[in-house]
Image 1 (cartoon, rainbow, N blue to C red):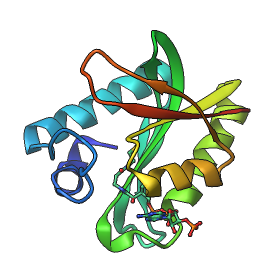
Image 2 (image 1 turned 120 degrees about the vertical axis):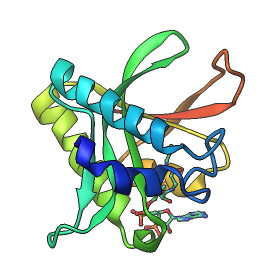
Image 3 (image 1 turned 135 degrees about the vertical axis):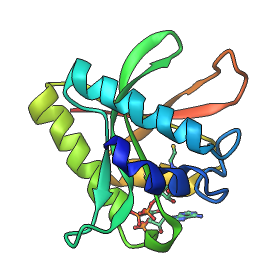
Image 4 (image 1 turned 90 degrees about the vertical axis):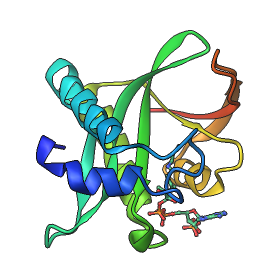
Length: 153
Ligand SMILES: CC(C)(COP(=O)(O)OP(=O)(O)OC[C@H]1O[C@@H](n2cnc3c(N)ncnc32)[C@H](O)[C@@H]1OP(=O)(O)O)[C@@H](O)C(=O)NCCC(=O)NCCS
């Protein structure tokens, strides 16, 4: 993910359908902050959310690894967003499986989680398909309920 991805990321994260389970779609400024956050993660950890694209170079979405706090404990999470026209073709499952393998083989992580809105069945299904099971609910201070799926690597 590079600053030059700002147009594609603004469309992706500004899409009400893609952001249905978030507080609100993101503005262009917030999409720029998202890119900057991932660039900081690359510098600090060597990974973050990456761009998903086709072999031809068409923008599809993002997927990758970030550290998130669950009930006060930092855990490695796989996250994914796929543009509506590319959904339902197995893209998120393929990308998330590659991130799981990267977390195990390159990061050396022992556990991988996914934090998901309780009504987001598509996201939960992707997590299940890469081998995760629901372990706990998380109630962050912000108040929105989230379920947590996890797997040992
Ligand atoms: C979640 C998301 C990334 C899935 O992307 P995708 O590329 O369409 O996912 P895949 O095609 O790999 O697989 C989706 C699975 O969920 C299932 N699914 C999709 N919509 C569903 C729904 N509404 N209810 C139940 N299952 C659903 C699919 O059938 C498929 O499972 P299957 O292979 O067993 O049939 C995509 O829907 C998205 O970007 N959503 C908005 C952003 C988001 O919520 N991200 C996750 C934040 S935690």
